[in-house]
Amino acid sequence: MGTKYQGTKEEIRALNAFIKLVRAADSVSSRVEAHLDSLHLTVSQFGVMESLLHLGPMHQKDLGRKILKSSGNITMVVDNLEKRGLVERVKDEQDRRHYFVRLTAKGKNLIKPFFSRHVARIVSEMSALTRAEQEELGRLCKKVGLKTD
Amino acid sequence: MGTKYQGTKEEIRALNAFIKLVRAADSVSSRVEAHLDSLHLTVSQFGVMESLLHLGPMHQKDLGRKILKSSGNITMVVDNLEKRGLVERVKDEQDRRHYFVRLTAKGKNLIKPFFSRHVARIVSEMSALTRAEQEELGRLCKKVGLKTD
DNA sequence: ATTAATTAGTTTAATATTGAATTAATTATA
DNA sequence: TATAATTAATTCAATATTAAACTAATTAAT
Image (cartoon, rainbow over all chains, first blue to last red; front, side):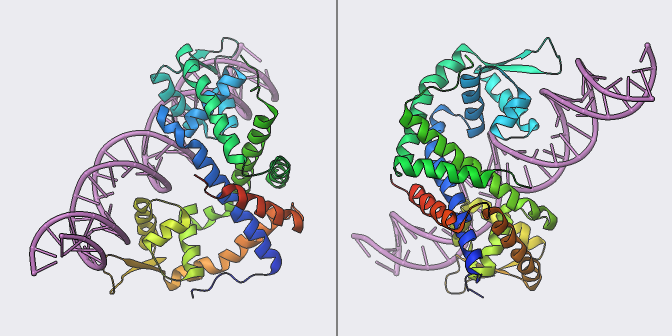
């Protein structure tokens, strides 16, 4: 009772790295995302708009893959953005099961200048690390994040 | 339209490190947490039980700080664990604003053997990195995660 | 001592998220 | 061609999450 977990050195090392990875991602992204409130955008809504801005119109399926959310959720996210006139759905005439989702002019005007400030925040957060450290962090994260199964 | 974000080298480096950090945390933890389903525990419920197992009975306030959730949410998480008889609330007689939350015998029997398997999963995931890399990842995550404001 | 401020926890309302079932369109197969 | 399987999106039910308002208990301040 009341004692910290006792494990082997190997276990402690892995647990430490894991918990720090999760905590860092959580605290950095919550700081980066704090300003989304000012546009009344959720993280998912921002993710959708940002994808559309930089990759062009996309099917909902692909948006789901891009922002790692279920298709049911994408329906709601796109619904809410559509209600605000920030995106629109266009039937894909080649394959009528799909919609293309694309930014409206209004949506583009909202997200474009905002995205620069978003990038500035990320740069500011990551500047806690040197260039070399940022690159090393990227490399290590990529290595550990890859699916192994 | 349809072009990836064009930024300075500094911006690209920061964006890359940031997105890889978030993705890695997300994919590693979703793989690690996949087995929680088998006990019908949510991530928050598991976090609460694990904290109680290793740190002993705690106030709900401290549980919230530990698993990074709002106090309203802790009420619900503890409610649901209590309904299943896995934890119990005990009024703190020193300060009657508080409850102590503690594992029941049933809860302890459930979480204890499960936790070993959980650790094994984390070790397995992190073994994609060498010892030195795990330590370096921990160091970099800690550095970038610290609040700067 | 009485009042004010603080603190822990609960409740409520709004929104987010998922997974499963469903609908509609397309492609494969027999 | 008719049927089966697949795919994209939607709907629904259950649960999670937060922020804000609220209750109850404690502490501080005048």
